[in-house]
Length: 209
Image 1 (cartoon, one colour):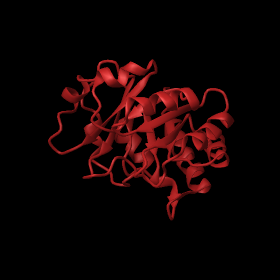
Image 2 (tube, rainbow, N blue to C red; image 1 turned 90 degrees about the vertical axis):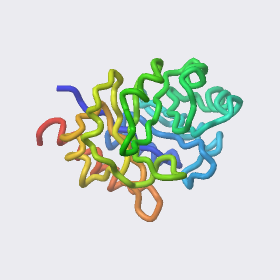
Image 3 (cartoon, rainbow, N blue to C red; image 1 turned 45 degrees about the vertical axis):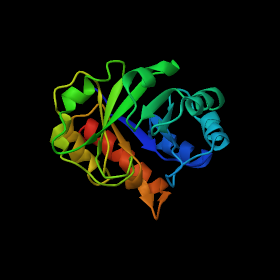
């Protein structure tokens, strides 16, 4: 049975990142978007990266970044993968020598397979809810059935996931991975108990417990 991968996004300290890894996270999202409350400075992100255990990926989450900024993140943090949340094109995303995930912000009339085809070099497509002027972390979900759009890339499901609903989301969408940020927070801060419950919910669904 294929296991659903787990990414916990928006972590802001080495201890919280380690707690997420111990709970079962496969990837840690490091936010490099200054308008976000979860934004990290380069050195903060590097400190988190240094404590991650083997086989846990560090993911740089960016929104319409300048090329020089990405180059600095790659050189000084040593991320494994880049997640592009903005309007970046395929050539830009693929030009940094690292695997990348492209985010599609799902709207009612979005032709998801057509949008995916514009990113042939992506190693995955992350589906998140379209909220005006918000790039991720909105806590708002979309119709999970939209994840079965017939594309060829692994689908990562995000948007409004919580420990309480992620099992149902996996049942409906059958994603390759799930991605959570605000759904495991309390008053805007990552909650280790919620992270543990989220990971347990995913793993319990996978193994029929």
